[in-house]
Image 1 (spheres, rainbow over the protein chains, first blue to last red):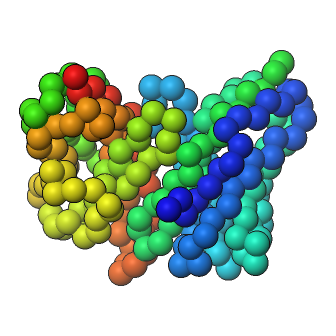
Image 2 (tube, chains in turn brown, purple):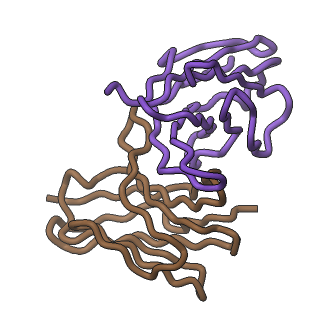
Amino acid sequence: DQQVKQNSPSLSVQEGRISILNCDYTNSMFDYFLWYKKYPAEGPTFLISISSIKDKNEDGRFTVFLNKSAKHLSLHIVPSQPGDSAVYFCAAKAVSKLTFGKGITLSVRP
Amino acid sequence: DAGVTQSPTHLIKTRGQQVTLRCSPKSGHDTVSWYQQALGQGPQFIFQYYEEEERQRGNFPDRFSGHQFPNYSSELNVNALLLGDSALYLCASSQKIREGLYNEQFFGPGTRLTVL
């Protein structure tokens, strides 16, 4: 039973354009949602989060949108840069336990 | 601040053997969580330690056990290794702010375990 789903395994975007990474969840008990970025041979690095009581959170080039009624969140990266190329994981938190999606590989073409 | 550190980096074992992985949390953090990341999957929660006790556990068999020491460092032990235990094992640390509330988790680089 996959409670956090990232249905697209990969995304390729031109440098300077917008990257939109999507995530769906099924458990209504999740109270916090997070995005992590992972490079090879490194652990996941926290990127941005959003509380379940908010619908948008912005940090520089990164914006996360939450649609609770649809149980859907998305990460927008504008403008995309080649250094953004990595695996991005969506995660949802209940108390302190994180449940992760399978991840999406973002490739930003110069 | 060294962040979260894990040892060893890589490990090769054979089926039936036992393994111990180690984790030192980020300075100021008192809670350690362990995750298993199989190839092509997201990290899966194994368990969490706080105040030297296991506080939460994911859907993993009793072959997976752990320990937290007074200095907050932690060990993950896996007995009777199976081929399917081959994965990247990630440790994450955080700080308990109050009951039910923790700050964000910082991850270590992981230990790559290969079971032959």
